Image (cartoon, rainbow, N blue to C red; front, side, top):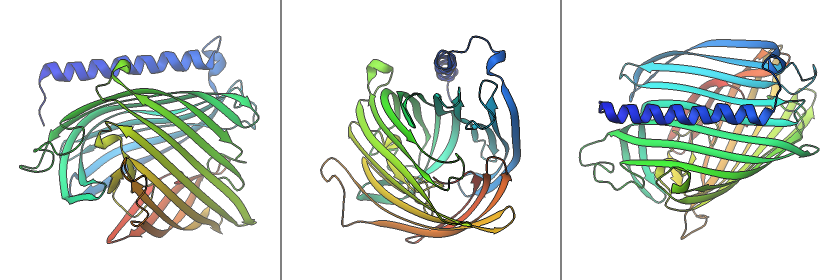
Amino acid sequence: MEQGTRTAKITIFGTLCHTLWLSVALLLFFQTPSFAQKMPKKVNILPFPVVYYLPETRWAFGAAVTSTFRFKRDSTNARPSQLSLGAVRTQEKQTLLYLPFQLFYDNANYYANGEVGFFRYNFYYFGVGEREVPQELYGVDFPRIKVNLFKKIAPKLYAGLRYQYEDYKITTTVPNGEFANLRVPGTPRSRTSGTGLGLFYDSRDVIFFPSKGAILDVAYFHNAPVWGGDVRFDRISADASFYQKLSKRAVLATNLWGSVAWGNVPFNMMAELGGPKKMRGYYQGRFRDNNVLLAQTELRFDIFKRFGGVIFGSTGMMGNESRLLRTDDWKYSYGAGLRFTANRRDHLNIRIDYALGQNSRNFYLTIGEAF
């Protein structure tokens, strides 16, 4: 995968500019008078190696670290913030750099979450909607920035602004395939930049492993050239999770997710089913379209000391502008997993899941719950 020097400089410059915008926005958002005042009280760090093998990457090696902490201005019982950093390099000279975060500040009066990353990677494409195609490999370079900034406006309720940016450039294709023949929406390159509004409700008793309460994230995005992109589309989505303690050792968790998009939506910005969070058991992006409705449920239970287990299932359907949802084409998956509590104070788990779908199966090892 080779890029011209000029294109590479433009991409790097654009990424740095947006990263600078992110840094300034966070500083303004938290409104702290000095750097010292916002330094964390206590930091818990969980480092771990990243090693895996996939046909599209061959061997991959890297490292990741997850940190949980509370700011000095917060009380000792305040909600913990989380910051992760990961870097991976593969035998196919692919690179993943990612920095997801969720920050609670001033005893949760302010909340920010999102991700900053750069990816040079290979993915499989399976088609859009009902137009499925044989599995096709493609390469892509893209920076990604997602930022959500909220302020508490009522007990447990937040309102705020959202921003997303992604410059998705296809770098390698299969000869005479879907990408080479420009049959995929948004190819060979799409630059998405959009702003939006959000409501966020959170009544969970704890952040990383709730036993009661609920969380609701409602978002509206308007993506348009006026924000620096080259595509125009809108999206409304709602993601809700509910937690119920069944006994001293068991919790039932349920997740509902719906999203509707209209306009010129590039394939990489469509709703996806599959991956470690939304319908485990399928390759991430195995199913994609403008609209989605997904339901997931998970029984979480203690096994012994720091070890726990889960059994889960999910079902969902997709749609587009002509059919809001294809109610005659349900997808489903199910599976089980193990948990190890790495941070006992905040109940942050290492997650191992094995899931099966329709003619599909996948194994997952990561940090934190699916929802």
